[in-house]
Length: 479
Image 1: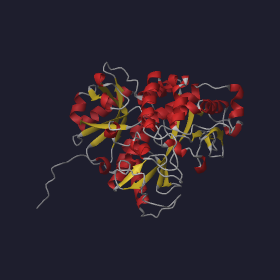
Image 2: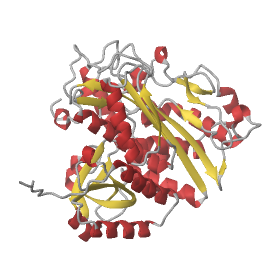
Image 3: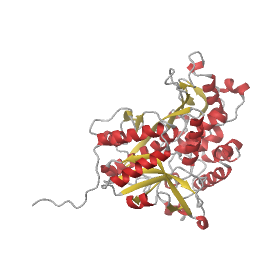
Image 4: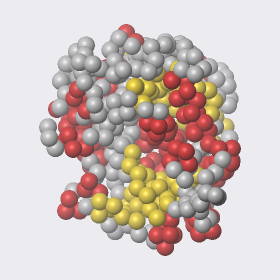
């Protein structure tokens, strides 16, 4: 007797997914008109009868990732009338001003691996709008998109390549069930490159890399990292906005693949004392008319005067920027200098204790690597903060060169110190808006108030359970 198949939703092979998603990414990086992108993808949705839903995603002020599915036919009829309750999102609108709109950013259209997300779905990123249709101020993805567009208007091209580390824990929902007595249980006690081909960590990395490749990340290498059960999957540089979107997708993919294996992928910066923590190194450069503005073969370290001014401006504002780059209580454990922590406010070609590294490069690859970024930072805010500070931020040109390798300045040692620097800084207010500066600080105070100021030598429950990326919304009201 023949099997009757009732459902017939679209499932695309991985090699075809990669081609589709690479083409989609190329279109937006090459600057294809947004109107033509909308027309293209709306026609595709209308013609493709085996799709059922469009996943629209956005990030809140802290970088927490949110997703909602719209029925495909509804979205085609009403692409400009997508709404959600903003008062349910921490840091967004108040209850009496709850309704917010979502505009589809059609350049972010991606086809999804059906074994990870289910069949018959595609994904887009949303741009948050206020009730009147204007840009919503707390949507930092929209702020980065506008800033990236302003650079493009000046014929500047951004290149951002993240290196994102994470940990794999045994069991699902390991963060929500964290117990400070037991701690996390790692799936592997190996170290750098130490994982047998069929070991759980390596199987996870392989499956993760397959899904990442299918989404058009342009993979380069993947491997276990220095700490036990730690991983890092590297991929090609791209435009600033696309890079930030890919960071969110990277973490989403890791969590989905891990959960399917009965594990938890976590981007806590320091889940266990006495081992290396996880970072998110950001490699940045800027080009104009195809020329890398950071390169000068005769300059110090092969970096141009413009490139060094970019570095100097970031170093000048390193302390107030620290809360942007290290946005959780747990992140300040990673800035422990005993474990290759990049907590010194200086630049170096070789010393990994410096917050900025100057890699060896040429006219194509000259860049700066900001190493003091936690993997739980809001990628839109972190990339916006570094780019705009490096290009426009304040600094003292007369003393900048002498301070590049000074060892006397270090980043704040806990979130309370970082908050003090952040809240009082005028440049931060210009960078992200005074209202966002206040809202963001309020959210971080809430987390800090639930955790001890003295971090000590033991991971506390509060720094995990009230971490902004851990989905336990009900706990905030019970504190």
